Image (cartoon, rainbow, N blue to C red; front, side, top):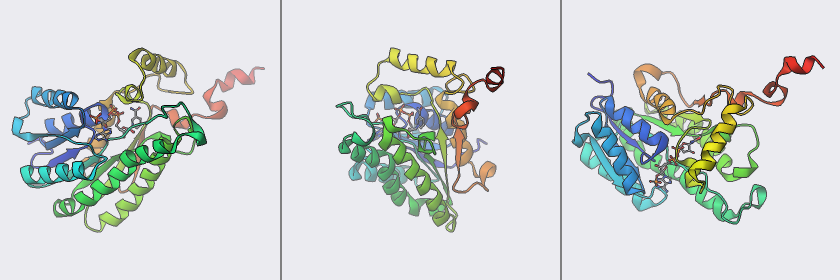
Length: 279
Ligand code: NDP
């Protein structure tokens, strides 16, 4: 029997990237899955990819919704529970690195970017978790949040509010985990480094520029020690691990970093230390 047989999962931001890969894995492993996003065409692509792997059509519920709105969230939660009857796994994955259209960065970044970023990356997690709580308590379920290494200790003035939203999300994961474990609900998160998804294109970059960024990072050990930018499924595998109580039951309120070593290199360690010693 597949390991998520009988379980119901809701994966936000599953019309693309990490969320899509996660929904596919969960569905292939037996879960009934609600997939969602604003882009109808990309959401349909996710659905078709799930169905191509032999998953029955009644195991996939596809809902077009803006997660930054209360009505979108209510529709998502109510439809999932009405149609599938329960909720076992909530993956709070939807997010965006929103840029300032006037090109400001750092402290001068327009505050409207702050509002939009916090609304999708942080507030939507808080409010959807509130809506999911009663259902997850009934099933002793799991929440997996998708954070970022951008929320770590290093500065990120180019995407100052994005980084702030992920730092706050990490604290939310820890505190929510302790609050909810008393009811048997586990909360954890994953903090990816750079992953090949639609995130840069959503920021307005064209495919060629995105490829140039990836190539640059892959060629620099101070950017990406492993030398390759990961695929969405590399993060999805970790999300699914954290959603599987048999495998990860004792992990509570943690964030697993998956970044090919990026966040571990700094200062001289990013260069050839032995080479420097020769001079
Ligand atoms: P993608 O752009 O490929 O996917 C983002 C997903 O979020 C899409 O499905 C998009 O759906 C959804 N989304 C964004 N805003 C909304 C909204 N208002 N309402 C509903 N859905 C929304 O990016 P990723 O897969 O990379 O991003 C997934 C998560 O991973 C994010 O939280 C991101 O911060 C995080 N992350 C990504 C990294 C990377 O390098 N790719 C690194 C670290 C963290 P739609 O457009 O259809 O609305």
